Length: 119
Image (tube, rainbow, N blue to C red):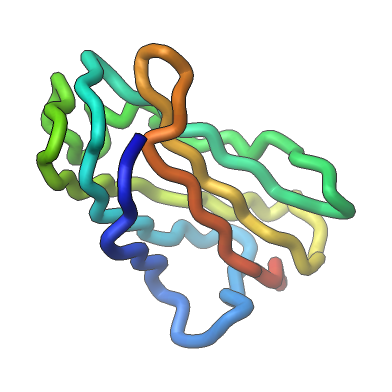
C-alpha cells in the first residue's frame, strides 16, 4: 500500500550490516502511502532458513515513530525507529525483514537487509 523512497540503517557502511551486540541502530524509511489509515504498526523479523522469527522492537506504533497519523493517500512520510541488538542474541548471519502495516493489516512497506550479528 506504499512505495519506499529511501531506507537508511545507521551505522551500516557496508552490507551485510555488522550489528554489534548491546548496540542500537537507527532506522529511517521514507515512503509514500497509496492508502489512508488511522494508524500503523511495525513488525520485525529475523529470517533464517526461510523461517521468520519475531524480533521485538521497543516501539511498534508507527504513529509514535515519526509518522503523522492519520496517514493520508499520496503523502510521503519519514518513519524513524531503533533496532536494538541484545547481547544474548547469537552471533549469526541473517536477513532482517521490517514491515509496516495499516489498520487492515495490509502492508504499507516491507524491506529486507542482510546482517551479521557480532560480539
